Every structure is written in C-alpha cells, then in structure tokens.
Length: 402
Ligand SMILES: [Zn+2]
Ligand SMILES: [Zn+2]
Image (cartoon, rainbow, N blue to C red; front, side):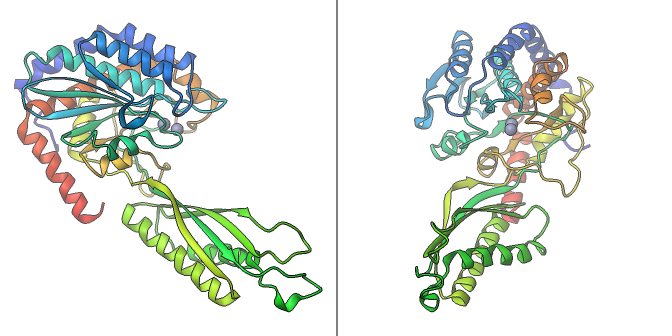
C-alpha cells in the first residue's frame, strides 16, 4: 500500500489528535450549524470570518484578518520552531437562494477542528500550522488572490476536504477561463446599401458554428460554452459590432492554453473569411486545474478509513467543474478529497444537498474529515521523508504538466 507506513511512532499522536477532534465535536458542529443557519455569499462572509477567527484566537492562534485585500479572508498561525508548515483551508461562502448547498459550512468546521487539534499537540511537535480562511470559492476565487499574495509560499501541504455525493480521494477539477471575442464590421442599411455592410454578428455566429465542429475532436475534459453579449442594436442596421463570451475548460492548464489558442485562430480565420476584424482577450485569471498530490491524498484516505469511510479513485473521464483550489495545487502539494453526505444519484447545489449539510451524516463526515486532516497534517510535520515524497510527487507532476 502506498504511504502504508503509518507506523507505531505516530500511533499515539494519531489517537491524541482524534481525541482532540472528538472532544470538540459539539462545538465544531455548533460552528457548522451557525454558518449553515446564516449563509453568506462570496466576499460577504463577514459573520463567518468573525466566528472562525474568534475561535482560533481563543485557541492561541495569531490571526491576520483581511489577507490579500479580501475583507473576509484570514490567516491564523500557530507553531513552534523552524520545521515544516501545513495549511488547513476553510471555505465558507454559500449560494444565492440555496444557502449552504455546497456544504462549505462543513469544510470550515473540519478545517478548524483539524487546526485546533494540531494546536493542542504543538508542544510536542515542531512546525507551523496555518488555518487559512478562503472566501468566495463559488464566485471570484479567494484562493487565487491568496496564492498570488504569497500565503502559500513556504507551505509544505495545503489540506482540505469537500462534502459531495462521491467518496473520492481526489477531485477531477478542470482548468477554466473565459475569453471575450469582439468582431468589428461595418454598419449599413441592410436593403438600401447591402453591399457596403460587413455583418459582425454573422461573423460571430460563424465562430459559434466553427467551435461546434472543433468541439467534436476535443480531448476529455475540454469544453467550450459560449453566449452572445452583443448582437447588434436594430434589425435595420447591419451590425457593426458583435461580441461573444466563451467559457473554456480543459483537463490541464496546458491543454486549456491550447484550447484558447484554437479559439483565437478560429476567430481570426472567421474574420479573414468575413472581412471583419477581431479582438480576442482572456477575461480575468481563470482557474488552474487541480493537481492532486497522491502521496498526501492516499494518506488522507488511510486516515479517514479509521472512521469507516472508504475513498476510491474518481471514475475515469468524469470532471466536476473547476475550483480555486487549482491555483493552490499548482504551487504546493495539496489535497481536495470528496466525502459523500448524499448518494450518487443526488447533486450538490440543490436544496437536498443544503439539508444534508446540516444533517447527522453531515456531522459524521465533518468530524471524520477533521480527524483525517489533522492526522495527515501531523504526518507532514513529523515525518521529513513523507513530506519530501509529497514534494517529489509535486515536482514530477509539474514536469509532466499534470
Ligand atoms: Zn459549489
Ligand atoms: Zn463547493
């Protein structure tokens, strides 16, 4: 078994960490329920950030609020000696109308539980524990800003779990970006002076058709979805300008770059064919694909199995969207396992999932995840060989573009 040397020296430590989590079960659940009861949207998670930082401060963490210029982000730090550094990531934003239908209240409580348990053993363990409040996963991507601000520089492992409808040791999450394409033509009266008109909307429609053909040969994980954001202003004017916004996804950040280049060359080809000119621009930074560190995620699987939860590899060829954890995982070893709080016939972002995030099963999963996160983090802090194997795997995947 890979990472199967979860051995005797640490057994006491694992038992202590699990005890530290389980004796806090009621208070962690109270935090989870408080977040669930008062859901806050991306970048507006003020009550959540106050609640979590308050708990962490009381436990002796030094808290920096407003990290990376985000009001509702924070970094709480505890530690001793030089040693290695682990980051427990906490999401806590909710969805419009649906509340905590992605279960981020459970992510926050599990991350905090693991951080508090680790804090309580730090007298005996050298290293640094960061509890990182990462707002706006659903819209905007707080982790991208935190990563850009250097929060993960010097971190040896970034750890979180996500509730879901699968028990998977890692999350197949694509790279993602948006591209704006604007065609410039020439306005004219469509019947009075038709030969002078250059129809920018016709060019945009041609691009949609071209991308539909390109889509047929895209590799697994690649996807193009476009909308028209400007299609002209009146039926008696040949549109001088038309604009579309395209959402692009791919299994890896490198293949996403290829797809963006494909879209650009198709747009330029269409422009040449239609006599228009075209502007193609990426909008925002997008997300990197998620790079699973299987040295760490296999170990997390081993630890959570003690709670009777068996994680497997994801079903091949299935992708579950994108997340800002991608930008963390492209910098440092990271995990993002899914643990089911509902069956596979269900879906997140639904009222049923929101109910499950406050259910007895939600509580069990949160606690099991807190314990497994704490034990995995302790392995990184206490076992130099394990931490360096995680880094070696990171470098290996980086070199392969995976
Ligand atoms: Zn979500
Ligand atoms: Zn989510």
